[in-house]
Image (cartoon, rainbow, N blue to C red):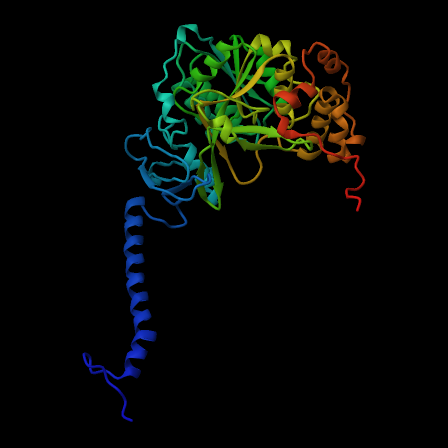
Length: 471
């Protein structure tokens, strides 16, 4: 039988097969290559080049809350800031800027790692611009506050050698620019015995020529860690309310009023902001919007996590109201100074960092107060690849700190802590006499906390040897 040919093209079936299986895909690859070349040309023109001499002009920011990917927004940060960009569950936001506006010192230019370039690009930009989408819920914008009835605050920011000066400056600038002047009594910077030249001489220059007189600097003669550095700052605070925050943050507009309103309603309140996260991964900055219904909890191993409100709790709830939470993350919170001192401030027997958030929140509850996350107060937290502040000796110090909390506040429930942390039994906690004396002044115990604040924690069945039935 002769080779068949098509009626329209006159080509043989074999020729058509070659066209479909070989030539067609090759043509598609050629077209795709052309599209990629056009895209490359556009990016290099728009961003001033994408060679290894400059970082990429695109910051990818991704919302990773459940719900899948949704609408994509693009924000050009080279123009006017767009502060009303909506970001909800599942949305993606990308922000672009031109690296031609970024200046590097000779020392910085000598070490052109991807991480360093992205850190410098992010933090050296004009700090009056909001680099990330607002995180608060829509209903917050409709709220009004009688600021004449709100207390003023002392903002305490601690730092050590692991911090970039540019990140620290960005944090301070965002506080100064986005806080009502009559509510901001002072900003107290606590240097935990840093040795970096930029954090000493460089910071001194900025304090002398840029910042107002209500920005104060305290330098510790010895390294004490996050907890003791914060204690140094809070004891120097002069305002009625203390705000503690990390040194790598960016606050939103009207971040403070919701915290102060929660404290005005109940002076025995530990009020925490919801944190959005900016995280660097492989040279790309990702943005995670912190859901405004999360609660922060801890388990018997003293590991903290996040838990969404139950469907029942969400029903008929005003989304702008504070959310009761067992503990806070500890990165940014406000508390009345007098109440803070009544419940024992920070435990100066703790070392470096870790466990202080659990300790403080427990004491607030057990001394008749409440701990809340405030949906209308948001701040972005910068998290870089690699080490962060105060993480030297993390495990050993954290275990000691956790044991101090458990030994003082858990009472008979400490056996469950030891069950999940058997190594802690042999750790030396140091002198606990002052903390135990403080516990005797509390009006509630840990049993009350389990029943009324966090019943989901449960009591593990550690004594049962076996389970079964009798047939």
